[in-house]
Length: 256
Image 1 (cartoon, rainbow, N blue to C red):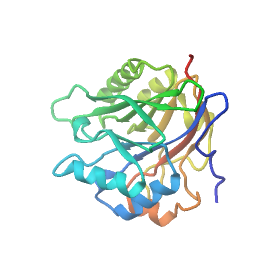
Image 2 (image 1 turned 60 degrees about the vertical axis):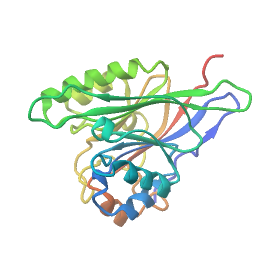
Image 3 (image 1 turned 45 degrees about the horizontal axis):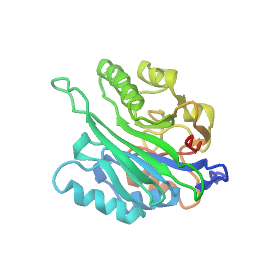
Image 4 (image 1 turned 120 degrees about the vertical axis):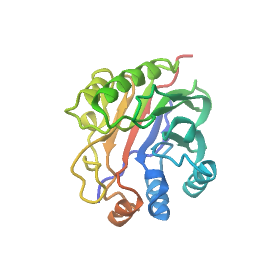
């Protein structure tokens, strides 16, 4: 069994330890009870979802997932062609923005779900964290362009500290992954924890799901929570075709 990550907390200096989960849930077409169990066991403050429900009654299905994981819906879903953000009540939503990326004819439409969240202590300025959930193209050229647009959106969130998480459809040796890692820090590379490969969930062989953090965000640990207490191998295989990536990050308090 893997050692647990640091728990969510706010430091005496106003900094916040935030648990962020990134998860491609394949439109909830698999075992939704297993999916909910995995998410709950990870105890996230923020969930960056990919392939959220986006067709008939998508809002009802997103609400089901939030309710059964003890979270609330923040933004995204059908409005972003799949990426979505959920959060715990610990997070105060400052603002959100749903982004549809330019579409290449014949290819699936892609988007970004973005939010700025505040984690407040009693007597300190809040720790502010920008969050971007992404799912990049299967086409290499479009994917590289989308990586650049993603970085532009992250820059435009209006907060110094940012986490980008999602399904990149590409491993660390790829140019799009490298474009993100050139500006942001790859969570697994700087704080490896758990296991590495994310796809497919039954017999993973590739790391195509990742979490990146801006330089001021300290990555305390990042990886697939295989073996974490409450996360069974059976649930991970049954929930969806990707494995989740869980990270604990420390976000400095905002300057007063």
